[in-house]
Length: 344
Ligand code: SP5
Ligand code: ZN
Image 1 (cartoon, rainbow, N blue to C red):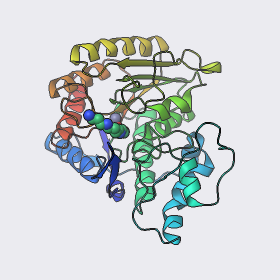
Image 2 (tube, rainbow, N blue to C red):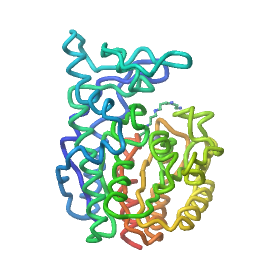
Image 3 (tube, protein in one colour):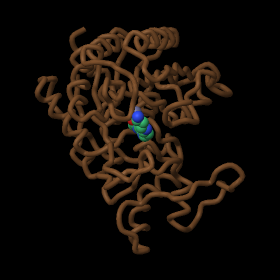
Image 4 (spheres, protein in one colour):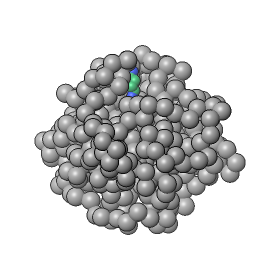
């Protein structure tokens, strides 16, 4: 398996996070990527390669150009008016307020282009998010040329909560969606995205909701109790031409590995029935027991089994790293998925 990583991704280093009513250290920190990298090296899973540098073309097929310009300039605009610390919204255009106009003020644009207060923009955010997109694109390119069967994109910041025109849930550019779009543009007729992060990938679902050419299947915590709260319910199945090409498998908090793999079997059946040319996996390991932001209980052996089951599709596969916050375990859990995949 090819493994792609860029140290430029460490430049996104949020200072603080608003969580549970307190301002504390950020959960989504650079150390996460270092831990995964260390575990991959220790497991001898293969050479770690830097990404190729891509233009903005595929990013702009997934994301709104006004949003991308915002990401590029928000921190400088924030500093230019004397702000210190990371840029964070303190207002949002909810029901009845107009979101058809782009505010001049950076505070207004933060409001328009984000959906939460846990996703701060700092000096290194755009360079890191851009690098993460290149990591995902490089992984996609290596499987689309047929030279490799599988590739792991060690992306950070994560991506699956970012939609066409908003950031949130620690995500800015949707790395998995960008990989899927690239595969489509390079000739795959149908691409399946399987999202196994603990949280529903609201961004990915939204991006492909009305399209039949990208199937989105997600196993995640019930949004009634867990972030992102407003998307990811079982009755969301796609719209317009995309009807039938979104499948959500929400599980209650406290679900164990047996329940999780039961949902996986359903997800796998939907993917096989779709007969995709390629698979993109949004791999969050926040389904692990003891994850500080989650309530499932997979162990390292379960992650190895997940890797084996992903390989069983027999498809060109790009595995894109998403969440996972138990810092002492996440490296080993990611390595276990990749080992399981390679072992099969
Ligand atoms: C990529 C990713 O995994 N983003 C996740 C963002 C979710 N942040 C949710 C924070 C809410 C935490 N609630 C804590 C409950 C712990 N008992
Ligand atoms: Zn997550």
